[in-house]
Image 1 (cartoon, rainbow, N blue to C red):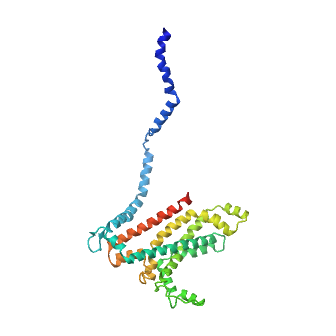
Image 2 (image 1 turned 120 degrees about the vertical axis):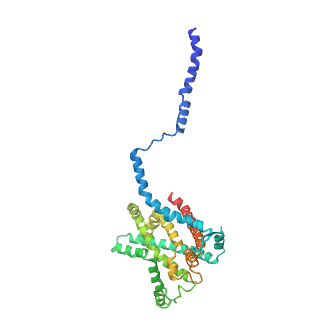
Image 3 (image 1 turned 90 degrees about the horizontal axis):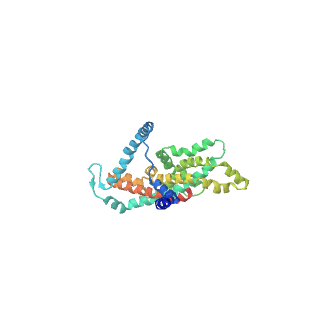
Length: 332
């Protein structure tokens, strides 16, 4: 009777034991436990002091960015929707400035000139810079002097450089036509001929942009493991083969950085255009930045200039995203 009495009472307990301690119960318990967030630990007193000190250190930079970058950017977007001439209060006109820009033949010409200028100056200057960087990365006599000479145009005032090139492109007494006459090639009116003016500006842009790109490439070359070149030499690889099989692939991160900053710099070209050609002849060398300057400081149409600046920003953003997408696979 005792066994009979105990049977019904203990059977459910025995039957429940596997469910309570079996694998399913353990798995369920783990799943439930994984859903629970770990308790938040309050930062210690020293941690709060460290965080407060960090915010205090970056506060001047944040204030500087907010005052001189964020607020002007917001103001530019807002003023691009107004008719603002500096002397009068802004008047809301909506998208009229953007419609005028689309219908403006001069701005379309400036956009095309900027694209052509960027298309030629960026890859040509990058190619020349990487070749010079490889040459100056070798052990040469007066190596530092050569590097300083190639980098000097980068730190020289653009206006001063443009004045030198203005003399070099002079049709009568310029150095360029003088050299061409020696080899029997007729000279050109480089800066006053619509067919040659933009190419003259491109040459100046290529020459001036080599220094910074070369310096970045030299820094990247010094991080390449020399054992790669030693192994290639053992295999009998030539210098040209090493350049294309080792040097260029290892320079891809630096190339992406140089490419992005070069596009940004090319779209912002202004000084040499202002000094060399003043946007002429017949708008043959006008650029997007020059049109912004002309609208803002010659015609005093600040609203229109802000709209042009917004479109310039959009161009830069699109070009940066395209270059980023094109090189994403190489970086990965």
